[in-house]
Image 1 (spheres, rainbow, N blue to C red):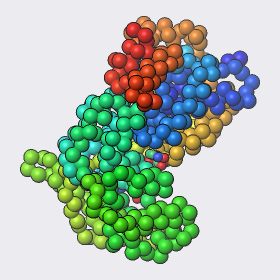
Image 2 (tube, rainbow, N blue to C red; image 1 turned 30 degrees about the vertical axis):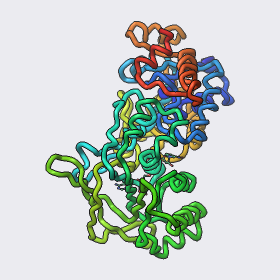
Image 3 (cartoon, helix red, strand yellow; image 1 turned 135 degrees about the vertical axis):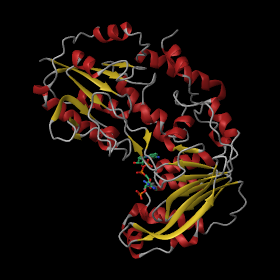
Image 4 (cartoon, rainbow, N blue to C red; image 1 turned 120 degrees about the vertical axis):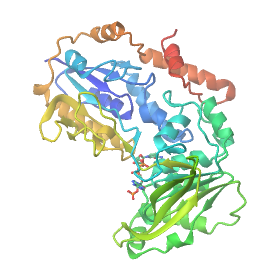
Length: 453
Ligand code: NAP
């Protein structure tokens, strides 16, 4: 065997880092990589998950672009695994496949009233404000008070993008429909609910501090949440991150001039979701939570005391979940592909699925920052290289076979040159407005611009 023909499914950071890692790895064979992406544009959650006002994180795109622009990776955008290309196709054309499809579904919150109008998953709202082509163009920000459930960085992104004034987002890449939706927003009060205490949050200091810097937004905290138990005091004293978070929260408690702003962010701790109340017409009218208290070990126990906060909309930001992939085993409980260090395993057994690998959030679950995906890719690629004996033996390994197959199926795929065209088009759209870019949202326009049609 002189060449590894590899298919990578998913052109987000996980897939691109895996390609980069393999191309740079010490190995005794040549490599050719085809990168398949469901969307017409690459970069996954960096383009469609990172908030538009986080240009520092969006800057990761520069490193990802350098990998794609090396010239030895073929990109097939607008190609959906399971529909446009199947596992049988991959076996016929490649020696192995790495699935790097991420985790973009919202984890469910199973409480009464959660299903119905006005209740959203964070991923839906994030996709809207990031101009994802497959979500509705309009977002109903037509009520004054909304709840955000969860105490992770996604909850803070969602809360910030609900409370921030649109004028302060104008310099970013938000598309016109998002600008107009935010400009029409009636939201004045965003209530963030965490089921544990301030010393047990999952968000990070930098992201928390940002909330306090929002123009014309007051931070509202409640004294009863800061009567720390021993375990919380210990956490503040021994963990630098918790210490900084505590310092930020305490500084907000002492702030002067609270009450003057036109919008408010309320931080409620020790609040375990119980029910979403709805009126006779089915509209959300309140969020019921059970007050919890520390259990002395970093967890909480219920107190039995129920409280209700009037709200008219709710966003759950309690974690993401992977999506099953046709033909590949799936661990429903954790929302990942069952795997051992990136080698995909048969369901309920330790046997490998030969030739099938995984990396990124669909491998390890939706935790960790984008940088963690690099070490993840390294582990997966190491196994792929060492597993040469169990690679597939494709009957059609020729480079021309995949474009011919997609063309025969009428798939309107986009390639790397096409992405450069779309990228340049978006940058040109931004130029007259002195903005870095304005995103193109409709899928058909993305495809047309990419294909130069
Ligand atoms: P996360 O960090 O795991 O936070 C999930 C939050 O939801 C936790 O506070 C958790 O509480 C809570 N939760 C889970 N189930 C719940 C339930 N049934 N009821 C009430 N609360 C519940 O997840 P995430 O916010 O989705 O973030 C995913 C990853 O992306 C993280 O690693 C995050 O740092 C990263 N990220 C980073 C940035 C950034 O750097 N700016 C932005 C976005 C995301 P418990 O702790 O009590 O379980």
